[in-house]
Length: 355
Image 1: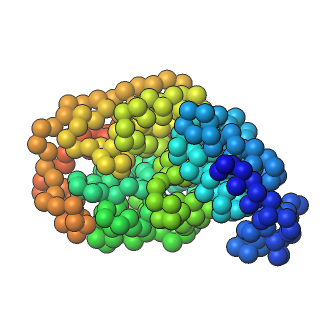
Image 2: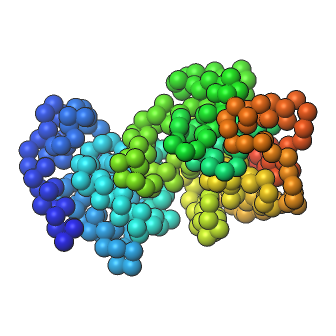
Image 3: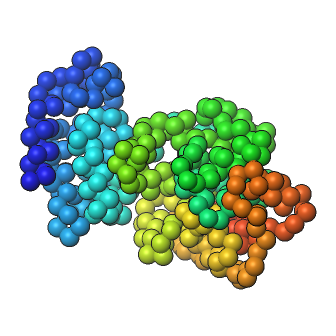
């Protein structure tokens, strides 16, 4: 019934070209042309869109996975803004219920990486990419501490993520409390990496198309495939190490398989279970980190710490001052984070030696 209603609505919405549309498929852009007057999208026809929704929208057990090409075409259209709102909601909710297959993730990632301009790293350097999309609910957010330790070793560190998240302390919040402003453009991020080896850029500045998908969370009430993809971005036009964090143990297995099978963005990734969804190691958990270079899997471990030093609260200003103290040597850094920083530097060196 839901699929039939969507199909009927699609016919009504796409029966005539949208105002100002100059693309080769004007019938596809009705309902979206007011927001995107000049369309640039993958040619997914209305009947094809209905077919794809039927494939993925039959529920958790009856739905079928898309092949990589169909997944690429579908998400390219999503990012271009040419999927009407009703169908967009259907696609995102269907994928959330079904779960993305690895082939779908590969197609989605390829579409994402083709949708935005990439950065240039400082000459001769292999950068580290840290996604920051979850924020802290209980533990202090120590992502900026990790980034600073890695940058001090000469590895450029690009953090990307959201500005704010209600009820959470974001990496952006802590960096702002430390007096570190976010880059307002790709060029500014490149300049910051060059001068201080550290930069943060919000997702709407890095890739506005994906940011629009993420923003739908507040209308839908739940996260979507866009959040998974944001944490896997490789925003450089050359080799880079991605720090990829998952929350649930079963996703470690899935991501390990993904980065072993697919070379989207260069494969090179450090995979771990982070702290509350952030990409920083949990200070009280054994920091087991997988290095995935597309050829092999290495797991780098160290012992867990029973009572690591931590800020007194998760407040952004308290956390910022505590991080400053750790960087100045006034108190120690949790062993898990020191181990993670060493793994990041080691991975960057291994990748650099391969060039």
